[in-house]
Image (cartoon, rainbow, N blue to C red; front, side, top):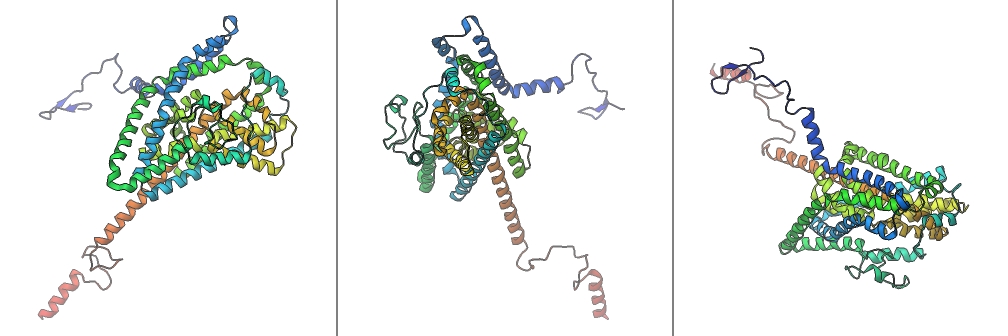
Length: 522
């Protein structure tokens, strides 16, 4: 009987139960849509928070009285400030615990290979971003036709320029940060009182004094030392592993507050701008050049590298980290985005914990593709603004200096501005024109951060593919050794098992055996 089904007990045929005409089938389009919305709820809320922040900021700017007072702006952006404080609270335990447990869980040889491949990837992508920024700046020529520096400085209200520093001293400070004399915080107010000429662990003025680069180096070396202890270090390794897991639970709780905080962060930045029209008219080509470079690097170059080496869809990988990218845009801090990025790549993209929690903190410290690209565009922009021609040697100097100085850039809002002065000093450009960059840095720095954290995620994805490939090779070699050992001592290396009915040269068959027996009887 067509369409009938067997009973569960005696096997008799029964007609299928009639389906209700009004109710949809289980597992239909509606159920799939609800499941998709439920699984991607946080992503949708985070993106909605960014869009709502833009809308609310523009609405408040055009409200009665032309906006808010300075005190009102602080109160308006307070929920966003809370998000930044929560994320920064997590950075120190997360970086230290994840790197210590990651370095202690890896074999020293594997640790060296992973670290070497990661640093090579970060270096090459940062150099590619720098070259792309210089090329776009020479093609677009954002400095031609821009408003005079004084007009832009007044309109943007830029102030607090970073002091000029000697280039050699800046790189020595980078080395000093690798070997910190103190791992504790230095209050930002105290930093303002310290002269730059004194030899100390260099931390940029006006920011919280957490030496992330020094923490990274110390945590890796400490993890290797714990592994060297063997059984004696197991207790401390378990402590760091448990601490790390508890920190990730806190990250999960913070993620659900992120959409609200991001909305007020974006809205607050839009409200505090003084004259949007003047800034975007005068610096429109500069902004367009930076954003176009970030789009090319983030949507073409990085996905292309990932596809070439893994043969996997890079845009599906990007879809898994949308929440972290939206948070990076809202917070403008790669260090603050680090906890969310770890959670996204592990849960959505299948990156193992020992890779993500070892590589991502390093990437958040040394991999600054977006910052290097924007710094190169800014350097060429300032040169064009001052009618200062750049020769080939100076262009190479910009590329190398931007790539090297991005390693020491702080993973905080406006961290790239603090190292831009190094590049300008290296090629003899005026550092006072950084005021032009500061005027619109609130927007460009957000796209910089998105590219920075995207590069970190793709680096983790490439290392995961590399370790999977190495594990596959090791498994294949192990199976081959087992097969060779199973042949036994009496078989040649190239001899295979076969059926005795199959005739081979010089081998006995049933017919030949029977003929020999018959002749012997006769």
